Image 1 (cartoon, rainbow over the protein chains, first blue to last red):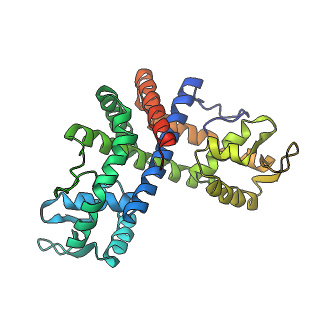
Image 2: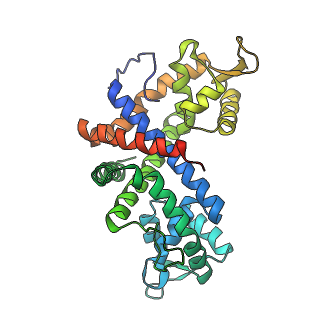
Image 3: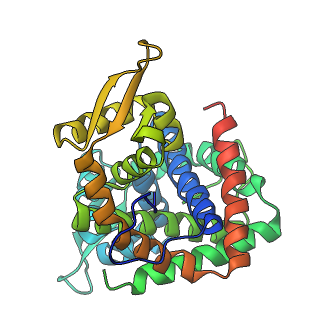
Length: 162
Length: 162
């Protein structure tokens, strides 16, 4: 994925074999894990991974309410992508939107009782899947190492200029 | 994402706070990293992450050729998803398909000279991005730990019944 047989004029710093193997393992795990969780959620709850994540975050906030911009932030989604997603959930009556009563320039997303029921019904199977595929696959120390690596990568992505 | 305020009759084994934080960090890193790399490749090469990956894997094989089923395997894609992808690349003349000369029941995908040129031109910027966001964010030991965790997760996903 990150190296070809043909050298180029720029002579970039190619990955060495160990770096290449590590990167491919990580990229493969990301790809297949996401796919497995999308399939599980779609099958069991009719929700995408990001939709589930958005409902879950709303459920944890006081009043099951969050500003759209804040929800975009905690779900790692762009505001435009989240807006489309919330519109779809609104059509299914799982979420509603209203102007922030404290500052009408902002819009709040609010989990509806139907949204909470769907989330509550789908959480056990999703948690069991995450536990089986990730948590139980690693020792507690390995899980902490994965967290550290993830936080470093996340920080790089967030401070990257493009 | 993996826990709601409402208990359910099944009493699933919820994640504890540390497991929850680790899982959220990993899920966030996966999501944002993939997005950053998709944007980089789309901007610099007009390719999706999976398209780039498929071209790169073909370039590394003898004759720049691989059976479709084998390419699906190494790119962690389903065969049906890969078929759509290869059709799109074929329309752009970056790849061609032909029956396997050794066994006509199989179809081979072959990287074209134009495909190799695009890959060669786009590899340096992509490798630089991967290096900046992942490889250089971690020590060599941390990168090895990430590989081990990724391999464990990948193995679980692949042996998971659904």
